[in-house]
Amino acid sequence: QVQLVESGGGLVQAGGSLRLSCAASGRTVSSYAMGWFRQAPGKEREFVAAISWRGGSTSFADSVKGRFTISRDNTKNTVYLQMNKLKPEDTAVYYCAARWSTAVATGPRDYQYWGQGTQVTVSS
Image (cartoon, rainbow, N blue to C red):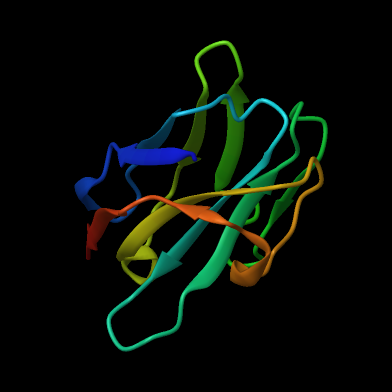
């Protein structure tokens, strides 16, 4: 089993930055691809970013390209989401996820493990 715990969420003004962290425990996720998703009130969970097991491949939603970056430190069993130039429409609960594959994926059903989420609120 893999447990994922997100941190780093909070309230920020539009144009600001936040860095989310996702710490894995239970077993190493160094051979797992990892992803970030978000869910705003009344909306479906949507893909944000993903990274392959060694970090050589990444994928981003069009809405965050050029503003968000994803990275991982397998020695710390941790994945990061750096969010810059935040907009009010980025407001959501952000979830970290892990999948039984080394390759990136963008669908929620492709991921087997999920964290509890961290709230990100961007004020205008």
